[in-house]
Length: 377
Ligand SMILES: Cc1cc2nc3c(=O)[nH]c(=O)nc-3n(C[C@H](O)[C@H](O)[C@H](O)COP(=O)(O)OP(=O)(O)OC[C@H]3O[C@@H](n4cnc5c(N)ncnc54)[C@H](O)[C@@H]3O)c2cc1C
Image 1 (cartoon, rainbow, N blue to C red):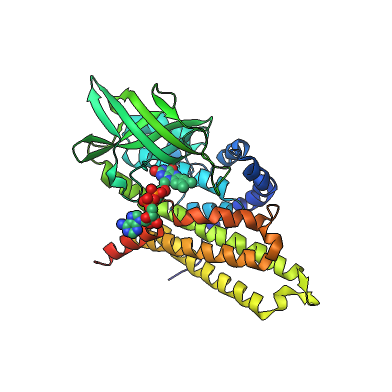
Image 2: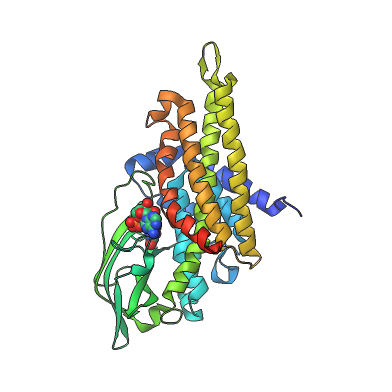
C-alpha cells in the first residue's frame, strides 16, 4: 500500500496553489462583492489546462486522472469557491456528459471548445418541482419532424448564462416515465435564461433559471440512447460528488489556514490567542478532520481512476466534507472574533460560500439516503 501522491500530483498542487494565491486571491473579494463572473480567470485557467482536466488530449483536454482533478478543485476552493465551482460545474456537469454519452460527432463538435475553456457548458437537471427528487422532471421533449421540441423549466443552473456559455444538457421526459438527455445550444429560439440569481454565497459564479418554450433542436442532439437519461444523470452525479467533496476539503483547509495565521497574530491578555488551549484544540480538531476528509475524497477519486465502483465512497466523501466544511468555517470565524464578521475579512466569504456544499449535488440527507441504499438498507 502506498498513500503518497505521485510527483505529478504534487507538481499540479503547487501549480494550482500558486495560481490561486497569485491570480485569484487578489480579486476574489471584489468579484464576490460585485457579483462579477471571473471571465479573465477562466481564460487563464483554460490556458493552464484546468478547464477540461480529465478529458483526453485528442478532444482538447489535459488527459489527467480524477485524483489530479480533485487536487485542483481543492486548491482553488481553498482560495475562492466561486472560481472553483465554475471549473467544477463546467467539467463534471457540463462537459463530462458529452464525453461519457455523446457519439463521436457530438464529441468532436463540443469537446474541443469546452475542454479548452473557450466556451462553457451546463447541466440542467433541477427543476422548480424536481430537486432532491430529480427523477420527477416535468420538462418534456417531443419528437416532431426530426426535431426535439422542448417545453419546461430548470432551476439554479450553474454556468448556463455567461457570455461564453455554449450549451446546456437537460433532462427531459421523452415519453411516459422515459427520461432522456438533450443538448440545447445557447441562442436557440425559445430558450430563455433569467438574470443571474442573487445568492448567499458563490456570488461570482453564474446561477440561472432556464425556461424552454417550444425550443426546437435537431434530433441528433439527443445524448446517448433515448430513455437512458435517468441512468446517465445518476452517473454524472456520482462523479460530480467527488468535485463537491474536493470543494469541502478545500474550503475547510482555507478556513483553517486563515484561522491558523490569525490566531498566531492576534494578541489578547498579553499573548497570541494561539497560545490559549481552547484555540489550539479548535485548530487541532480542524486539522484532524481535514486529513480524514481529504483521504475520503482521494480514495473516491482513486477508485474512479481504477475503473472500480466509487458511488458509495463519493457519497461518503461528499457528506463528510460538506459537514466538515461547515464545522471548519464556523470554528475559523469564531477564532477571528468580530473581525471575522466583517465583509473585508476573507473568512466571512468562506463562511457564506460553505453552506451550498451541504445542498448542491444532493443534500446531506440525500447523501445519507444513497449511503444507506449501498449498505443494503
Ligand atoms: C448555487 C446553486 C447551484 C446549483 N447548480 C446546479 C446545476 O448546475 N445543475 C442542476 O441541475 N442543479 C443545480 N443546483 C440544484 C441543487 O442540486 C439542488 O438545489 C439540490 O439538489 C436540492 O434540491 P432543492 O433545492 O429542490 O431542495 P429540496 O429537494 O426541495 O429539499 C429541501 C429539503 O428537504 C430535504 N429532503 C428532500 N427529500 C428528502 C427525503 N426523501 N428525505 C429526507 N429529506 C429530504 C432536503 O434534504 C432538503 O433539506 C444548484 C443549486 C444551487 C443553490
